[in-house]
Image 1 (tube, rainbow, N blue to C red):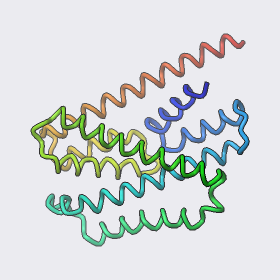
Image 2 (image 1 turned 30 degrees about the vertical axis):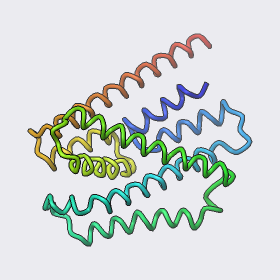
Image 3 (image 1 turned 90 degrees about the vertical axis):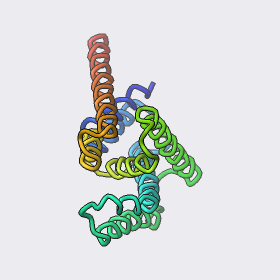
Amino acid sequence: SAFPELLRKQVCNEILVSYLGELYFYAWAKGHMRMTTAPFGAIKDVAILSAMMGNVFTLLMLLLSAPLFGQLNLPISTHTFIGSALFITATSFAVTFFRKRLFSLPRRELFYVATLHVVRIVVMMLLAAVMWHRMVPSVELWWWLLLATLNQLVSRLPFVPNKDVVFAGLAAFLVGPENQIAEAVTLLASLKLVTHLAVGGALGLSGLINNRRDD
């Protein structure tokens, strides 16, 4: 079963460095799975589509929450904001323009994978908003929109370990360390980190046990 390996991939991406999990999963798939398409091509396509869909939603949320960020009086110029949005748009269009050279999977499978990524992003954002609201119901809805946008922005940063901890730090910077919002976000980030460490430890222990049995 590939499910434990997918968990290892997720733990690597979350705790260590982004895309390290894809490298691990590629190495595992190359030696354990029979695929009609090269495993590198399939994993590459999934990673590119994930980045594209993430960029599209990040851009939409930036445009939606731009007036709210302006109310915080952050030291961010309009040119910086527009430049960031244009960079996200340009990278997504570049991938679309060179799609015939970049992608290996058939168009139907690419569309299916992209749809799954869209559903995943929407469901995760809705669940996070509901969870935050349940923890701190007195906070206004626009704060959760800002935090969701900030979380989406942090998730797009490449090669950054423990993005939940980075997000918690940025949230505390925006609202103040003593605010209920910062406390809730910090608690959730700590729980996610502990969960990832526990899952990673359990998978590592099971791998050692299986290797001893094989020997």
